Image 1 (tube, helix red, strand yellow):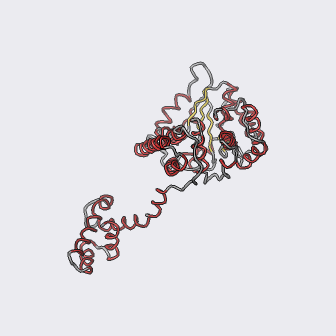
Image 2 (cartoon, helix red, strand yellow):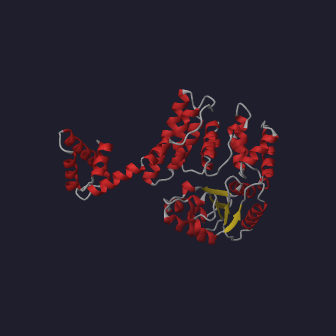
Image 3 (cartoon, one colour):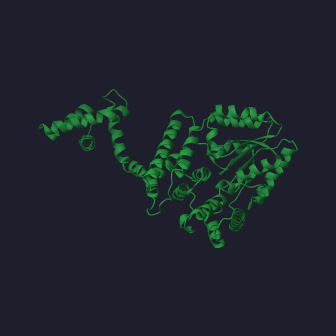
Length: 408
């Protein structure tokens, strides 16, 4: 059984719990088919409620050529122009209607090129083909420029009974052996997120023991451990990619969570080696993306940290040890005061040392600490040493002592 097959719907009528949103999108599709110019819809709402699935179902029904981009594809104006402008003013090779879908539009971060906002706005004005935007949060500041130019289509959390109906239909269609009372509990725990409910049903069905212990009570902002479970237990690339994309933390943090917790689940040395190698590759492409601002590298990060880890195993993951918060984050938090003190001393020294604060911290702090240590070892009075550093470098006795404690 492939998890990707569970997500697919054959018609928009299969989207449950959001009848009004489905009606609005169906009306939009009728306008598109009639070749009337219509305001682009901004489809928004919580994850897993059927937003993207509805658009794909409409495209399937009407034979649209769907040109789809997500957050990693439109981080700068040149990408928007290169990919979209020609699509906005032309038909497909075989005469089908081009429809442009910009998914995750509210995921534009502080790194997002402001020129891309202008390009997206220009796209709305110039496009002869329909455009659909999808977001989780309509009120995100990053897409405030879109609100007056789009038609809001709201998706809500899906009711429990509707989710149960979806799970029962899928379990019957694909022969998934999960009891109805367990399906009901999965639906309750999903908090209105159909995709997460499907993920959890798949996890339960794939487990050696059919138990809800493989899924936890869902908290949208603290869902990292549940995501780790889904990645470690997934047996397909699609399933693990969906797990990684649905968590409400950024890629760098998820890489840290995986690095910390893979050894707690992968007990076979070969499995562990392959998984940690994939995490190293994910970190490599993440760093390349951040340094070069070429965010297509994020795609490789996502594949390595999800599918690379999931498919690294030949053995069923252990559940003996509890997950842990990444130590690297704890370490950075614990050393914040020390790092701040070092930066303050380096800023003082910059008045007399002709170098950058970064270079002073890298080389000069250790050198000065060594000078103070050697002076005291040679028999020089502590007060005399501190007086020297006060007069020469403007450092207080407390700062000299800090240097000796941390750099000598």
